Image (cartoon, rainbow, N blue to C red; front, side, top):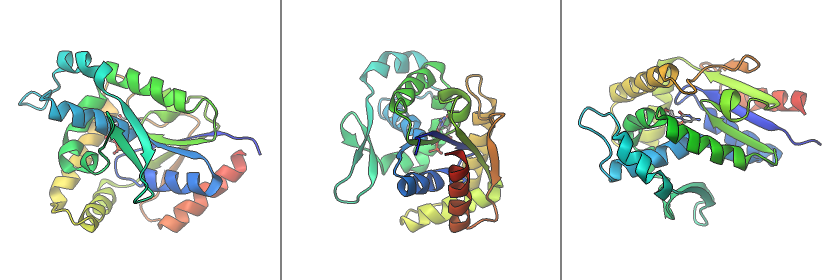
Length: 228
Ligand code: C5P
Protein backbone atom coordinates (compact mmCIF):
# COMPACT_ATOMS: atom_id res chain seq x y z
CA UNK A 1 0.00 0.00 0.00
CA UNK A 2 1.36 3.46 -0.82
CA UNK A 3 2.44 5.58 2.14
CA UNK A 4 0.91 9.01 2.49
CA UNK A 5 1.34 12.17 4.55
CA UNK A 6 -1.44 13.03 6.98
CA UNK A 7 -1.86 16.54 8.37
CA UNK A 8 -4.12 17.06 11.38
CA UNK A 9 -4.67 20.68 12.32
CA UNK A 10 -7.06 22.44 14.61
CA UNK A 11 -7.66 24.43 17.76
CA UNK A 12 -6.05 23.86 21.16
CA UNK A 13 -7.20 20.90 23.20
CA UNK A 14 -9.60 19.47 20.65
CA UNK A 15 -8.14 15.99 20.80
CA UNK A 16 -5.96 16.20 17.70
CA UNK A 17 -3.03 14.42 19.29
CA UNK A 18 -5.16 11.56 20.62
CA UNK A 19 -6.64 11.03 17.14
CA UNK A 20 -3.30 11.41 15.40
CA UNK A 21 -1.47 9.09 17.79
CA UNK A 22 -4.20 6.44 17.51
CA UNK A 23 -4.17 6.53 13.74
CA UNK A 24 -0.38 6.36 13.54
CA UNK A 25 -0.36 3.34 15.83
CA UNK A 26 -3.14 1.58 13.87
CA UNK A 27 -1.53 2.02 10.48
CA UNK A 28 2.16 1.84 11.50
CA UNK A 29 3.03 5.45 10.70
CA UNK A 30 5.34 7.85 12.55
CA UNK A 31 3.53 10.38 14.74
CA UNK A 32 4.87 13.89 15.32
CA UNK A 33 3.36 16.34 17.81
CA UNK A 34 4.51 19.73 16.54
CA UNK A 35 2.90 21.56 19.48
CA UNK A 36 5.47 19.81 21.69
CA UNK A 37 8.24 21.46 19.69
CA UNK A 38 6.84 24.97 20.23
CA UNK A 39 6.31 24.09 23.88
CA UNK A 40 9.96 22.98 24.22
CA UNK A 41 11.20 26.28 22.75
CA UNK A 42 8.89 28.04 25.22
CA UNK A 43 10.29 26.10 28.16
CA UNK A 44 13.80 27.05 27.08
CA UNK A 45 12.80 30.72 26.83
CA UNK A 46 11.16 30.62 30.28
CA UNK A 47 14.20 29.03 31.86
CA UNK A 48 16.49 31.63 30.28
CA UNK A 49 14.43 34.65 31.26
CA UNK A 50 13.37 35.52 27.73
CA UNK A 51 9.98 37.00 28.54
CA UNK A 52 9.29 40.62 29.39
CA UNK A 53 7.03 41.31 32.36
CA UNK A 54 4.11 41.97 29.99
CA UNK A 55 4.45 38.45 28.55
CA UNK A 56 6.05 39.50 25.26
CA UNK A 57 9.13 37.66 24.03
CA UNK A 58 12.68 39.07 24.21
CA UNK A 59 13.04 38.36 20.53
CA UNK A 60 16.71 39.35 20.13
CA UNK A 61 17.79 37.08 23.00
CA UNK A 62 15.77 34.21 21.60
CA UNK A 63 17.14 34.67 18.12
CA UNK A 64 20.70 34.41 19.43
CA UNK A 65 19.79 31.26 21.38
CA UNK A 66 18.04 29.39 18.57
CA UNK A 67 21.21 27.54 17.54
CA UNK A 68 21.46 26.18 21.10
CA UNK A 69 17.94 24.74 21.17
CA UNK A 70 17.85 21.12 20.08
CA UNK A 71 14.56 19.26 20.16
CA UNK A 72 14.11 15.55 19.58
CA UNK A 73 11.60 12.78 20.25
CA UNK A 74 12.74 9.58 21.89
CA UNK A 75 11.03 6.51 23.21
CA UNK A 76 10.88 6.44 27.00
CA UNK A 77 11.77 2.86 27.93
CA UNK A 78 9.90 3.04 31.25
CA UNK A 79 6.56 4.42 30.06
CA UNK A 80 6.58 3.41 26.40
CA UNK A 81 5.76 7.05 25.55
CA UNK A 82 7.48 8.96 22.81
CA UNK A 83 8.84 11.84 24.90
CA UNK A 84 10.01 15.29 23.92
CA UNK A 85 13.66 16.06 24.66
CA UNK A 86 15.20 19.51 24.95
CA UNK A 87 18.99 19.49 24.67
CA UNK A 88 19.11 15.89 25.83
CA UNK A 89 16.72 16.32 28.79
CA UNK A 90 13.32 14.62 28.88
CA UNK A 91 10.92 17.57 29.24
CA UNK A 92 7.68 15.77 28.37
CA UNK A 93 6.02 16.58 31.71
CA UNK A 94 7.39 20.12 32.04
CA UNK A 95 6.10 21.22 28.62
CA UNK A 96 2.51 20.22 29.50
CA UNK A 97 2.30 22.65 32.44
CA UNK A 98 -0.16 25.54 32.54
CA UNK A 99 2.81 27.92 32.75
CA UNK A 100 4.13 26.71 29.40
CA UNK A 101 0.62 26.72 27.91
CA UNK A 102 0.33 30.34 29.02
CA UNK A 103 3.52 31.40 27.21
CA UNK A 104 3.58 29.23 24.11
CA UNK A 105 1.42 31.17 21.66
CA UNK A 106 3.60 34.34 21.66
CA UNK A 107 6.64 32.12 21.05
CA UNK A 108 4.86 30.31 18.22
CA UNK A 109 4.10 33.67 16.61
CA UNK A 110 7.79 34.58 16.24
CA UNK A 111 8.68 34.17 12.53
CA UNK A 112 12.22 32.75 12.98
CA UNK A 113 10.94 30.21 15.50
CA UNK A 114 8.33 29.00 13.02
CA UNK A 115 10.87 28.87 10.23
CA UNK A 116 13.23 26.70 12.27
CA UNK A 117 10.46 24.33 13.40
CA UNK A 118 8.99 23.96 9.90
CA UNK A 119 12.39 23.01 8.45
CA UNK A 120 12.75 20.24 11.07
CA UNK A 121 9.17 19.06 10.56
CA UNK A 122 9.56 18.84 6.80
CA UNK A 123 12.77 16.84 7.24
CA UNK A 124 10.86 14.30 9.37
CA UNK A 125 8.32 13.74 6.61
CA UNK A 126 10.47 13.20 3.55
CA UNK A 127 9.69 9.46 3.48
CA UNK A 128 5.93 9.95 4.05
CA UNK A 129 4.20 7.41 6.31
CA UNK A 130 3.73 10.19 8.85
CA UNK A 131 0.88 11.68 10.87
CA UNK A 132 1.70 15.19 12.05
CA UNK A 133 -0.54 17.34 14.18
CA UNK A 134 -0.41 21.08 14.75
CA UNK A 135 -1.81 24.35 13.45
CA UNK A 136 -0.14 24.84 10.07
CA UNK A 137 0.65 21.33 8.86
CA UNK A 138 -1.85 21.27 5.98
CA UNK A 139 -1.23 24.90 5.02
CA UNK A 140 2.53 25.36 5.44
CA UNK A 141 4.49 22.28 6.50
CA UNK A 142 2.94 19.78 4.09
CA UNK A 143 0.66 21.65 1.69
CA UNK A 144 0.83 18.57 -0.58
CA UNK A 145 -0.36 16.14 2.14
CA UNK A 146 -2.72 13.53 0.70
CA UNK A 147 -5.02 13.63 3.72
CA UNK A 148 -5.75 16.81 5.68
CA UNK A 149 -8.07 17.01 8.64
CA UNK A 150 -9.15 20.17 10.46
CA UNK A 151 -10.52 19.49 13.92
CA UNK A 152 -12.77 21.81 15.88
CA UNK A 153 -14.85 21.63 19.05
CA UNK A 154 -16.48 24.32 21.16
CA UNK A 155 -14.15 26.15 23.61
CA UNK A 156 -16.25 24.87 26.53
CA UNK A 157 -15.90 21.23 25.46
CA UNK A 158 -12.17 21.67 24.88
CA UNK A 159 -11.63 23.28 28.28
CA UNK A 160 -13.58 20.46 29.93
CA UNK A 161 -11.39 17.87 28.23
CA UNK A 162 -8.18 19.66 29.20
CA UNK A 163 -9.43 20.04 32.77
CA UNK A 164 -10.18 16.32 33.03
CA UNK A 165 -6.79 15.46 31.53
CA UNK A 166 -4.78 17.65 33.90
CA UNK A 167 -6.88 16.59 36.90
CA UNK A 168 -6.30 12.99 35.88
CA UNK A 169 -2.57 13.66 36.12
CA UNK A 170 -3.10 14.82 39.69
CA UNK A 171 -2.47 18.50 38.94
CA UNK A 172 -4.24 21.28 40.80
CA UNK A 173 -6.08 23.22 38.12
CA UNK A 174 -8.79 25.81 37.87
CA UNK A 175 -11.43 25.37 35.16
CA UNK A 176 -11.78 29.08 34.39
CA UNK A 177 -8.01 29.45 33.96
CA UNK A 178 -8.05 26.63 31.45
CA UNK A 179 -10.99 28.08 29.51
CA UNK A 180 -9.26 31.46 29.41
CA UNK A 181 -6.02 29.87 28.19
CA UNK A 182 -7.85 27.93 25.45
CA UNK A 183 -9.58 31.12 24.25
CA UNK A 184 -6.40 33.20 24.38
CA UNK A 185 -4.41 30.65 22.42
CA UNK A 186 -7.21 30.39 19.81
CA UNK A 187 -7.08 34.15 19.40
CA UNK A 188 -3.29 34.46 19.08
CA UNK A 189 -3.00 31.35 16.88
CA UNK A 190 -5.63 32.58 14.41
CA UNK A 191 -4.44 36.21 14.33
CA UNK A 192 -0.67 35.90 14.03
CA UNK A 193 0.99 37.10 10.84
CA UNK A 194 2.99 34.01 9.94
CA UNK A 195 1.03 30.82 9.23
CA UNK A 196 -2.07 31.66 11.25
CA UNK A 197 -4.25 28.73 12.20
CA UNK A 198 -6.76 28.21 9.40
CA UNK A 199 -8.35 25.32 7.59
CA UNK A 200 -6.56 24.42 4.34
CA UNK A 201 -8.97 24.65 1.41
CA UNK A 202 -8.69 20.92 0.78
CA UNK A 203 -8.93 19.82 4.44
CA UNK A 204 -11.87 17.78 5.73
CA UNK A 205 -13.43 19.45 8.77
CA UNK A 206 -14.42 17.47 11.84
CA UNK A 207 -16.33 18.99 14.75
CA UNK A 208 -15.84 16.36 17.45
CA UNK A 209 -17.70 18.18 20.25
CA UNK A 210 -20.20 15.35 20.56
CA UNK A 211 -18.10 12.38 19.52
CA UNK A 212 -16.47 9.70 21.62
CA UNK A 213 -12.81 8.84 21.10
CA UNK A 214 -13.92 5.55 19.52
CA UNK A 215 -16.18 7.38 17.04
CA UNK A 216 -13.34 9.73 16.12
CA UNK A 217 -10.99 6.81 15.62
CA UNK A 218 -13.45 5.10 13.25
CA UNK A 219 -14.11 8.32 11.36
CA UNK A 220 -10.42 8.95 10.82
CA UNK A 221 -9.63 5.36 9.83
CA UNK A 222 -12.36 5.59 7.20
CA UNK A 223 -10.82 8.78 5.78
CA UNK A 224 -7.44 7.07 5.78
CA UNK A 225 -8.81 4.07 3.86
CA UNK A 226 -10.38 6.36 1.29
CA UNK A 227 -7.08 8.25 0.82
CA UNK A 228 -4.81 5.22 0.40
O1 C5P B 1 -0.89 21.44 20.14
P1 C5P B 1 -0.52 22.20 21.39
O2 C5P B 1 -1.69 22.75 22.12
O3 C5P B 1 0.41 21.45 22.28
O4 C5P B 1 0.32 23.44 20.85
C1 C5P B 1 0.81 24.43 21.69
C2 C5P B 1 0.88 25.76 20.96
O5 C5P B 1 1.91 25.70 19.97
C3 C5P B 1 -0.36 26.20 20.23
O6 C5P B 1 -1.26 26.92 21.06
C4 C5P B 1 0.20 27.09 19.13
O7 C5P B 1 0.42 28.39 19.64
C5 C5P B 1 1.55 26.48 18.86
N1 C5P B 1 1.59 25.66 17.66
C6 C5P B 1 1.76 26.26 16.44
N2 C5P B 1 1.92 25.53 15.31
C7 C5P B 1 1.91 24.20 15.37
C8 C5P B 1 1.70 23.53 16.60
C9 C5P B 1 1.52 24.29 17.73
O8 C5P B 1 1.76 27.49 16.37
N3 C5P B 1 2.12 23.50 14.24
